[in-house]
Length: 161
Figure 1 (cartoon, one colour):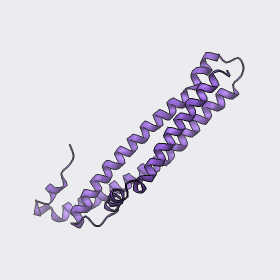
Figure 2 (tube, helix red, strand yellow):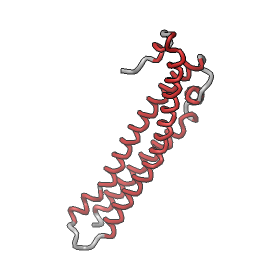
Figure 3 (spheres, rainbow, N blue to C red):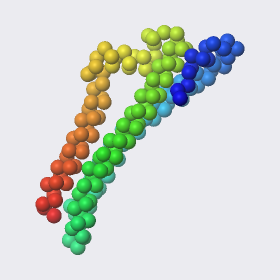
Figure 4 (tube, rainbow, N blue to C red):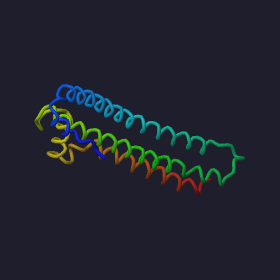
């Protein structure tokens, strides 16, 4: 269940303590969001390195390796891509949950909807639905094209092995 930060307002004796708590939580969540952004960037490289490594092994293997094993290995890059996409979705879900909560803290502490980074991002996304979300669309295109390419290579290479 999601914590109710509005309940902190109704207890006046918590005033300074509540504000200090919310500011600490705000800083922690902003840091968490930044970490998720870094994780997203690393994930792309890790997935591509894994795919490349598997293809290097498949296409430079010695002739005495079992052909059935090589045929199975051809599809591992597609599986790595799907797993990478699922991890990306997980990172995005956690990042958006933290961002939603930061918006609530911004509204509570600033008593307005006009200030704060997360408020800015939300307004930008709602006023410019495509341009405001271009990074997400590009990342989805990356995952779709990576999956499609690995699958096409696997199917094409099956006949060549």
